[in-house]
Image 1 (cartoon, rainbow, N blue to C red):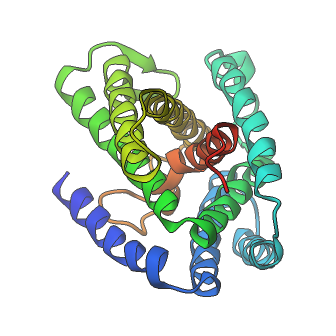
Image 2: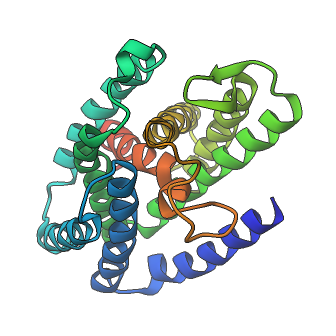
Length: 267
């Protein structure tokens, strides 16, 4: 746990100045590097040959899209939102052996497209438009992870999805949702306004982001379980791989941006 916290703090100290003070071009290059590691890990879990070459190609495509996108953020958000609404069906079907399919999850390599591209492109759009919003979603998801882990370890008794991740519990989920509610409310108070309905909308957005963050976490758990791996990699001490650190954000960021658009907070 201590190593996990130290690694998270170091990552945040690197991330914070990049969000606020780095030019958009520098931040997008930084995202392209992280995208490479995330895609490489995903393709390794999917047991794809020449995964590193595909990861290089994918990161170049991401960079081209990131530098060329105009006012298309809402398109990425809507497309990703539709995808993440369907993911719980896949996770539920995975509880039966018949639905698990072959042991080698090659088909899951294709999911890297709707999972990685929208989240990273929307992160680039947030940094270019409202860096404080990007920091808000990062802190929201991080707080959700921390409180879910703490509550789950202390009071967790009821497994959430034992066929995917035996350590996750309903108690931990409720702890994460509580963190989402608090961070959604706090972020709204600081960045949007203090009206009652405004705070209620922010709290609801926080809970939705927290809930879909769990879905993102469980989707990566499915991929790891199907490939027989405990972690996506070893790059980050205490966390595992890059995917292990950002899995909840991959779902949380598109839901967050969709919420901003629906509430009229995306300008």
